[in-house]
Image (tube, rainbow, N blue to C red; front, side, top):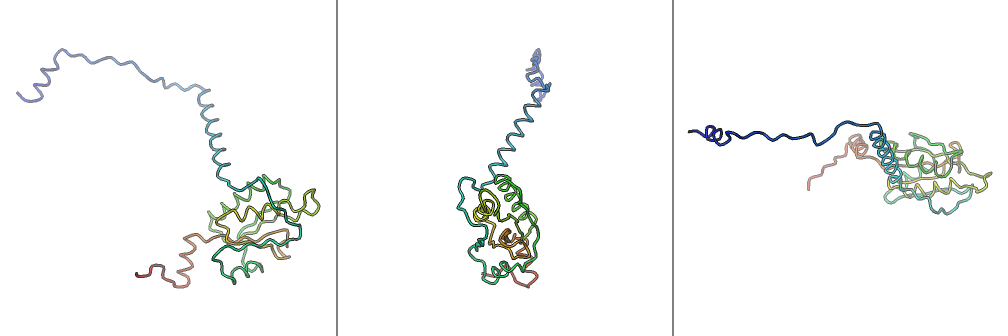
Length: 194
């Protein structure tokens, strides 16, 4: 006898077990609504958590103060050119008539979008706030927030033709793709033999 015949003989008289359905796949309207609400809540929490810009305390600056920050590794000539407004601006964000919380969200998204699209030099119009109950409130927050963003290499108050002390030029870190383009443009080899 072969294996199949042995198996068939051993299984003679055996009947398969009847199994009832264990899962009811009918979806009711309430379940899909609660799933959608939970998904929206989770997304909202994730979005809020991603924005790490502080909103607890800010050191106030004056309406006419010049904002200036230069991160490590930025050449003097590059920073000077930024201060003088000599770089073309790739995008702008206007924060006039925004609350601090709206501005916080907008600044975070703006910088994130600029990085995603490989923008290098942008401008943020924050105003001076001279006529506000708390003068230079948004300007003070911008001064703090931009220092908290690791991809901000430098910033400086704008030239008069771009808004003066009511605006700030922001230089962002180059993406790896943009660095490679610069190397190719100038004929610099990126892989040196060791």
